[in-house]
Image (tube, rainbow, N blue to C red; front, side):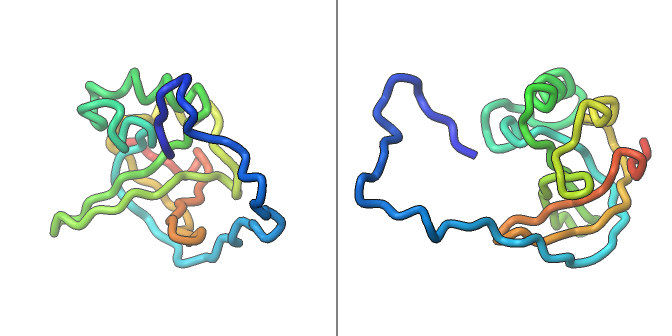
Length: 131
């Protein structure tokens, strides 16, 4: 995800560029998991808002996700190791059914997948439980 300033020449066509070989990687299943953490929006997590987690962030995260930004799941273990995974449901983006759980402590059971250098957490809303 990137943020840009309107009106600048930050993107333009590469006249000599060849996009014929561009392809998305295929998601690779890694493992089934049951994790505790927080659902947040990726825009604010990566720097547009501080704090980017918790109750203070709930309304902003809900607006961002409602507007189409991809949700992510943030987990931290007892040893302070953390991970952020983009959330999907059946290989597609989540819809507004996810909003009641945003920015609250939840448990999710699903499948971790590797998508190139990204990790995805694929789980339906029915696999989310409030802690």
